[in-house]
Image (cartoon, rainbow, N blue to C red):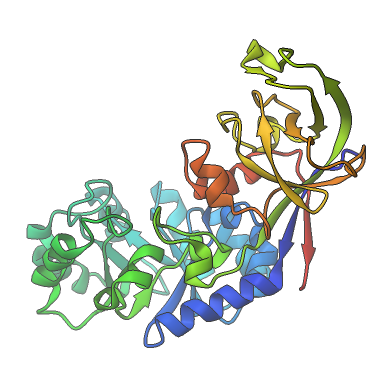
Length: 358
């Protein structure tokens, strides 16, 4: 069997949930589990954090799996309905719906439901992705209050720059300005906002990346936030080459040895979710020591420098990211973010998930 796997530490996951609860101690937790729980496996993640008040996902298919896993609390569809045909399944599963466009409100008005639905009215406060214009909020709330298919309303928005210097002030001020006259629950804080801005810790917070032990910030590490990495991407060395000074390595010959080198070939490539654009020098953990990648990442393999790891051999363990190498550090060396690398594991069908507890 090919040696690559993603080890998912469920104890780290529950630890991170407690970190979030401590930070946002007066808020309810809506754990974001979209993209197969950011690559960590939806069902096992649900079972590990079943104490949360809510879970946010994208699809009804995900919701079915969550209910079958025994989760009885709130489930929110973050993008709402994609078609009128889904409304009765939403009712059957007792889901909460995000409403962000007029068509979704029409879907909700054109049926008769035995069990009314809780809705989350999304307000576009400046990200310009999903949500209604702020000047429509009063009209929309009047409409929803008159709709017998609506049992409750939560007001929500999403911040574009909670992880950057600009912060959330402009968007939060907009949100407060149009919602202050109402006594509905509110939900605005993603991972970055709930960590950095106490004023955003309203009735609900929506942690995503923090639960998985990575950071939403460029300048604040996961270690500083005190969350633990949940996923470790693990493989082994499958070949060793001794190359001479001036010899090239890999596709494109874009790495040329400046001296004689011993290199290892690892069974992991971009087909497994490792970033193709990881630069030479990206940190990697081999045989209990940090070293670096060299050359261009292939579909199925990558190269590592073994010059200072004499004991490394075929079969030696390699950690691409995890407890020794931060996924955020790999992402930084690849021109992307940790979110993408974790989610890439879901996109690959070649990396089995192995669950451990501790």
